[in-house]
Image (cartoon, rainbow, N blue to C red; front, side, top):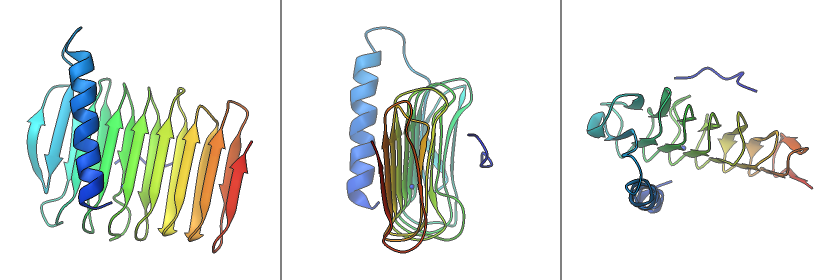
Length: 181
């Protein structure tokens, strides 16, 4: 399901991402310190080996957060107010396709991928299992996958939700809805 090239909300999403970083960082401090990268508007605030954050210098209000290793990365570039968060080994989140605004991509779990781009106010969330993907493109779309084979939503105002190991949902068009189970 890794067909996309490797290279998604405003202040509330940034605050949520920073909160997640704090919780995961606190939970991880009991064992070993996690590999971590936090960047905004092209400046790395925190960075350690094994992680990559890619916000562009020309964009405004974009944030990329990575806590993970094995090439874990996040890219929040182009547009304004985009957030990409990756929590997990080998994970990837991006909001970089097109000049969309207020897109949020969150990938939690090993090797998971979340893509929210190609428009405005798209949200892609990937939680759980290994090597899964969520993607939202267009405007005001949401894709959420939890321990499933993936969720994809495109068009305008569409949503796809997949929960469970045998679930896969793909919707396109305006105001389309898809859920599994």
